[in-house]
Length: 107
Length: 123
Image 1 (cartoon, rainbow over the protein chains, first blue to last red):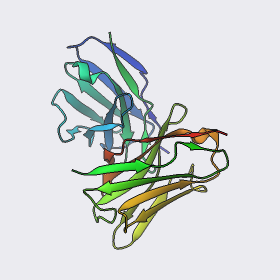
Image 2: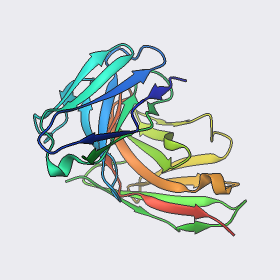
Image 3: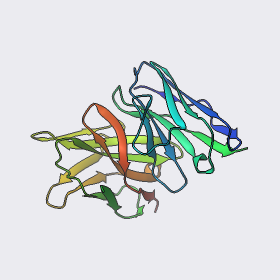
């Protein structure tokens, strides 16, 4: 089983600043990596798939990068609606697996 | 607009069976492109994929090893829905349960989610 690690549990960022979240896979997943945003009481929302492709309707301030075992999600200028928990998910290996999440909070 | 409407009890007693349904509108459970999944989320386990079903000339159903001995996922074409049954539950099965869609058997990321059902296992 591929273990996904998001080493930063909480990231404190001021509105308008840039946030970079990291995700590591225990074995290569190539670019079969997705990112989700989750707000309290809501289901996760797909942001990025294929490591860097934005899902439909996702603002351009969200960008993904990386391949193999190291990945990043960057939010270029944090808006108030971006404060949430973010999860990475690999879908290259069986079974699909999620990271533990990074909470982006207001500094 | 495709929607997933979940239903089922929010409280289940230990050793009993957890049963949830996910009604699909705007798409088909027997689509030749979509795959229908169950995922759960708890503080102790995080987000955990449980299983999936899809139709490609015949029905396929796959389960996570962690629950394989206790889980059944069933598609219902007459009601355009899928169901989840998890038997012999313990408090460790307390979680928010989601149904979710992905496209194809390779693109295994989830673009559509139900709203989730909190299921508490307690006597």
